[in-house]
Each structure stands twice: as structure tokens, then as C-alpha cells.
Length: 101
Image (cartoon, rainbow, N blue to C red; front, top):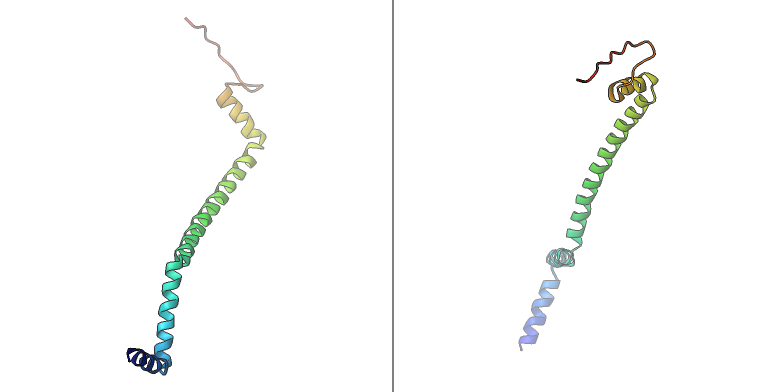
């Protein structure tokens, strides 16, 4: 007898397409969450944001290094660095040498 009541109740439920669609949507949502696809998709979006930030930072670094490279090719810059860091003197510079005591 309980089988017939279940069959009648199921038939009544299946006669309401809105309810059937709602249950299908719930089952679909639960299966996606339990499958882990939602979490993987969220993780991929997070990784994409991080990678895009790294790409932007790398582009800024490349622009900075390109500017430094352009500056380093300038002969005046090379001469200025030689004077400042290597204590070299130019051809017409006056150099004082003091004896150490």
C-alpha cells in the first residue's frame, strides 16, 4: 500500500513542472559544489588575478630597466660613473695628491 501512495505522490509532483525544475536546479547546484568545480573555478580566477598583477609589475620593471639601459649607453653617463665610482679624472681635470702621514 505504501508503494502506491508513493507512486501517486510522485505522479502529483511530476505534474508541476515548476517544482520539478526547482528540484533539478537544486540537484545541479549541489552536484557542482560537491564535485569541486566551483572551488576550482574560484581558484583559477584568483590565480589569474595574481598572474595579471605579476605581468603588470614585470612590464613596469622592463620599462624601468629600458630607461636605465638607454641612460647607460650615453657617453656622458659613462664618464660621470667613472669619475664618481672609480675615482678617475678627465683629461683636463686638476688632481691633487696628498701624501699619507
